[in-house]
Length: 467
Image 1 (spheres, rainbow, N blue to C red):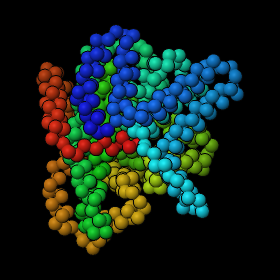
Image 2 (cartoon, one colour):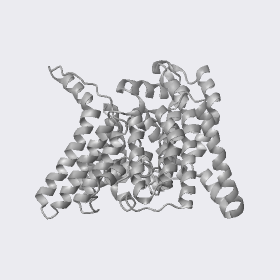
Image 3 (cartoon, rainbow, N blue to C red):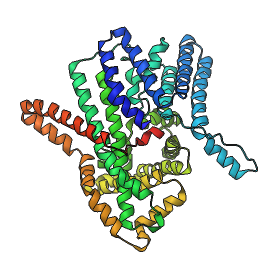
Image 4 (cartoon, rainbow, N blue to C red):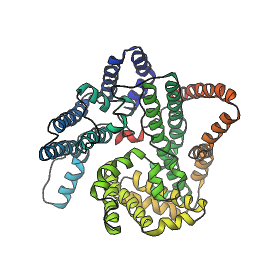
């Protein structure tokens, strides 16, 4: 799928954009629909039917919700069908092996595991599609009567496989009526190239370090090697995912859509609560709107609020993958957010920003250990290596890795702050004339640099495709 994605971006995408811009208003959605189906089917020729099925379920549920708008009982049934069917697809394709393994371990049964391949991006497009019926049930949006328009929304190729999670309400007014301007296209190109650079130049290069360390025997690595490895992953996952999100937002803007922002410099956060307001914003919004608030949110006292937070964050962890590590990862952040809710958050606010930011960053780092190690045993071994170094603080391997990747660590650290954005703003404020020349020149140069890196690249994972 990585290869197919790159082929699409550098071969099929330009053709799609040309056809899209030359098409009349009535044909633009058809072009997008065909492009989305081709893009997804390129890597998932069979499982594209799962995506279409999910969309069809929610479309027809939506039509029935609208038709029987005066019958609350029937409307609840239609909503329940939509939610159960969508979560059922997730359960079968994403979680069946996990639950079968639990049953086989805890009982005398020996159920056969079908080991179904995970459809790429199923967690993203299922949540997107399901948001439509929930919001329609709440009477927050109007029904979409054209199946082709609804399927166009679900299959929008810029964010179909890895987000951001675009709720129907976010683009309801743009599905059938959007404007495309030179300024939007120009801004979109700039955002897209920025995301491409994050992914190709930073995430790929710093990520090779984590790949090397992850392949080592954790019980034998030094403390410095362990810290370098997990810090590399800390930056890799940020630049990989935020880079893809930027590319999606940029492409969306070029097509006339305004997709929501998905990242806002999360590593500058001063608390875990703030971190999750800045990291994967659309996922946090989805769980807040459709899980936390329906559970009662913070309306029923502190104790119930804490319970609701723990439930929401456990489910957030489970959304990421079918393993106990992901469950514990979600619960880990849920507990920390509850602790802040109970008063620690006010303490963090009073601390110097350097201390509270360092605390939050380290919390995120430890979370990534849970996130990207396969088992509790591996997590334990890696944490032990970080703090004891298996008896070795640093060795020749660690020094070699440090010197070899020092440049990318510096770029990653600077890139995760607002220093580059602020420098661009200062240039614009200082001289609009210089800025108007420098911006397109920098964007063009960045595009060719990224292309050169991609041509020679053998390492190019997209981390969030697996969700």
